[in-house]
Image (cartoon, rainbow, N blue to C red; front, side, top):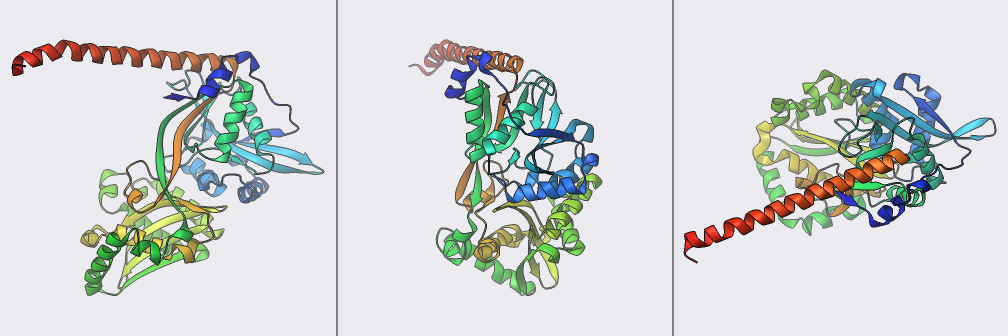
Length: 408
């Protein structure tokens, strides 16, 4: 686990841990308490977000709270400011109650995640972002927990930069773990030139596979957006994602009725808002591969892929991915980049050229949390030192025996 040197220095003075003086107000809401006006304000915040995140959209969070996570343990925190007769929403933090663990050995809060979430964090408006992130930190204090943990969040973006500043100024401890680089791509850089350049070998194989597949019927690729994504499109995607190993292992969305209900509601919400992209590969009248993708602000987010294993010899999944890269400038060229949602070592790393730093980050938000995280960090360091010394002793003891056995 990595501990930032700058934050270490600030955390040496826990008395400096302080709350901000702000005119903002906080509301903690369950999913059933969210009004239509609240949802509308949340959607508007998405368009002003410093870091867009489809996994923090109400189109995603509300269905997830309804079908995937215990509502009693999850609250949507609105950070608002009074302007005249109305309130303006500046930040949304979806927080889940968490028991003591190895990261923070005290009750704390975790930024929202579900089994289908691939990026966590906080949704905050660009204007006054630091002030409103300070209010988020204030929302997680001794009353609601002693720290905040964000799993699978960006650690190379503007939100992380501001949170580091706040932690340094307040004397909050910051711990980073499980870091890796995630594949991303810039749609405007893709297209035919990219496939015939850096991906030329894959493109040649793609053409060969398409020629073979064409013997079974006309091969077509299409990208559907917005309201053209109807119930039939969603049903085909669910059916394809359930085929093969996902269905056999019980990890497909269709394997669990609650997960299927979540996807239908979530995908329909994004589609109705013109923020969904589904790519389909067909042979004749049969769709054999499908990908689902969602949009937040100026960013795209790849979600799920499914294909018919009966056509696996033609690589329908890879074919669908490569064809999407070919048409990306036309169908998604206005987006800054696409987040793959993948883990380290994903097959997409060979196709998507850029990387984004992802990690789990923990912050202390109280004096007690500060001390607990400091003790936890020191305990881990001691364990690591003991393990290294034991490993070194083992090598020293066994080396002479090995030398005798080989006659050296």
